[in-house]
Length: 465
Image 1 (cartoon, rainbow, N blue to C red):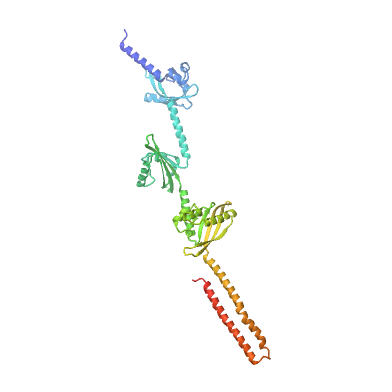
Image 2 (cartoon, rainbow, N blue to C red):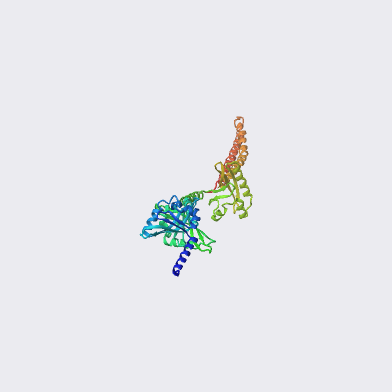
């Protein structure tokens, strides 16, 4: 009669064997690693038949980098009573498959290892996915390290999870030293404000930009432009922050130098007692000094606009704008200096004259700008007019003189021969002398009148100081 406990035990072993054959890869080798039995799953994974594996060393499944595996495994069997880990194997067709397996020894009556039992799970898909992730990480690292900007990933609380090589080099620390550390580029207050800005990021407003002055590993203070972009999950929750830091110190210094030069240049141009304007090649204003327009708001408004825009704004006659455009086009076409005089009437009705010039400015044989120069020549113009008036008065005086002086002189010249006549009586000689005396009196009176007129005209034509 069969013992029921024996039957139950045999049934349990059979069920266990079936479960292993269905789900696991199993093999039994002797203590030297020669296969004694293999199951169907191992044959399918390796591509070998059972007959091809039985009697062969486990090395038939080994890859080139498995040197020393058996020795390490054997040492683990002796010291730990078994071995567990991931093993890389080569199939018959040369492809690779991975097993997560356990190797345990089977002992004989003498407590010597007689056989080795290997049970494993096929994890090739898992390992390939793992390797793909690793390759992607290596590729990402290579990409991030090739970018000449500091890159880091961090939590919304400010703890870094990744930094690239440029980031490490700037702060003189390793990636491990920088990971899981809070920001430390400024004082606590600034850091709190900065983190508050990061927490305020939303899917609709995912980025912010800040400029910070940070000291690098060499003690140099550098201007870093940080661009922070939030990464959100499907529910719109901020999970990570991608930070890009660009060293803009040279650009910042160049901007400051440009501002300094601009301030210096404008300081000079604004103190020159002349209207100065700079136009682009389309006759749009680039710069106007204070003499040209005293109102700063109007100067700023005029930049990028033309004289036609100004006339339209001020409701002025566009003839002046048309005139200036014609001179501008001539200067651009000829590449030479053009000058003319603008005539204006002031609020009190006086005429004002402005001498204007256009100077074409070239770069690489191309006109880039036209410099406009205007100076008030009203006083010169008036002096010219006074000079013309003075000459006119002198001409009138000369004409009058030619008549008033010539008549007495002609009379005197006519009377002189009579005085030389010895036959002339004393009474007649006295009459001639009296007539000549009257002529000299007329000349004297006219001379006085002429001097008085010259003094008057001089006073009228000389500008009052």
